[in-house]
Length: 402
Image 1 (cartoon, rainbow, N blue to C red):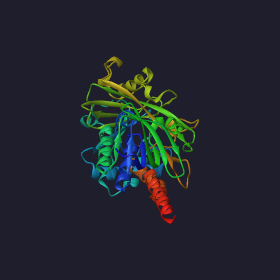
Image 2: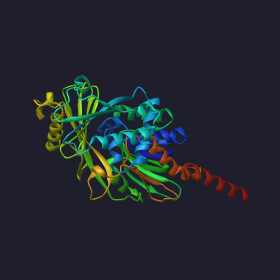
Image 3: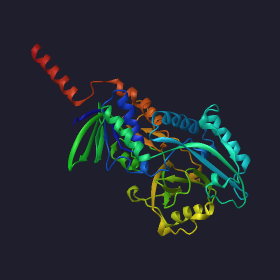
């Protein structure tokens, strides 16, 4: 295994995988350091969706939605075995906080951002008396149902495929391997890490921290670290119930007005997600009893056939962590834009990727590459081996001149 790389990517979730893939495609030498397993954190605990984020229109994040819809189009074309279109259903009731006109307006804007001439952007109103199409949806006080299309994926499988692509491009995966510390010197970054019970050292031009919920912990091991803004971890829980309700995804409104997905998954039904601030060890995040009960109540409200289900009958449940900008407002309304932070804006040696979405991992990777390319291309003879060779040549020339 080499000890000299252009870039060390720390973290093998979807963001780290995307960065490594983009760098190897450009011919850079890359190492990926992962402490546990590929996609072991948030990248296997998401809502399994490749989508623009219809709800982000409410908070005015139009550029994010447009970017994600562009990425969705690329993934559907280039990874059809992993990403596929699914019909989404939005029911509207007399008690719903979002009126039919507001849903139509949101879907129209969503279609416009996706490209109005694309078959993927079409939506229509469904007959509320078509019980087969509604898959047992509660019809009490139902006044409208809208259908549009977005995409679903296996998040862990997608991450693993991107890592494999990076490895085919020459990236070396060190797993399990944990960063001990990284020090920026005049010409390179020295990174010490544990692997197979031994302390090892490698040298690189730039270190990219893609450790998700561990971003602050990893950054604290770098000297100097990237300049991070205030960040907050937000936990999101999903439950899996032992019933296959539909082959469609239902986008429903929970008791507090939050959007919750009810979707097919592994022959059963997945329901999620929640949002609560989290302050503990990222490795110890778990669904709370209250979160599981909240999601099960939401499911029962909309699908009467599930009402006999008890919490003890859940097939599975899990919690993942998002990294969001720190703020006093509700996590639901905060920006989902990726934050790329550096130790030095002009010559970044330590870069940290905070936040980011599964759908837009390629766009995040392009932004990281744009940020660090000038540094990577500024001096090709940076490595300790090159420095030793240069010093040896100088000493040889000096001896010849004596």
